[in-house]
Length: 238
Image (cartoon, rainbow, N blue to C red; front, top):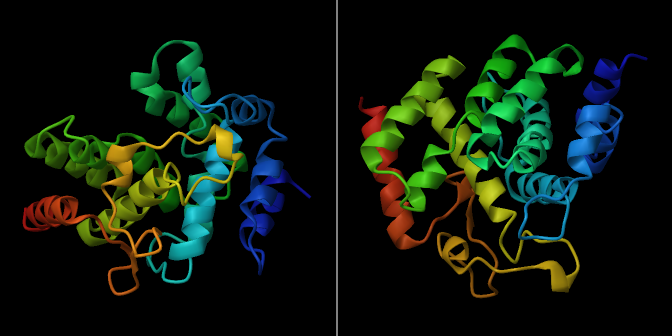
């Protein structure tokens, strides 16, 4: 069986396990080298560990409500498995600011064995091409710049504004959520809290992230929720 089919089958298992998909992707030497490398210079866990955390955040909360007509759940699972695949190489080259370019190049280089539809491939490249929502939330860029960058991503994806924004919010939240205390799966001594990141999410009384099935996503803290809804409205209304 070709690796394309093996990956596809793993993504569509009745009881999906991201570790199985990642294990198959690791049979590609370039991907394996990335997965076993450290996720950052500040943390002692690997890219594979971070990727598992991101994927599990999605499965634990979003998989049950995921419903994007032009982007299958298997395609989104594969995107999450590969979303930071170029990060270690960018760190090695002291070029983290351009890590998205390394990720895009690696995904593109192996696209023939990755079971994305043509539409899903476009959306995947668009989603990993930039992080305007995260940069805006962290006050690294202004709202006008974030809107310009998100609109560029929407154009790249060829999706409707509504569908792309829903995907972008899910993608941002599972990635950011993986860095929270709830998302962490490693040894206790390896976790370093990011207070500013934890503070962007609304928390339940037990300290867990607050998930709204109605919204199909986590609820942000009051200030961030207002900012996100504002930018979403500005983009939707042109």
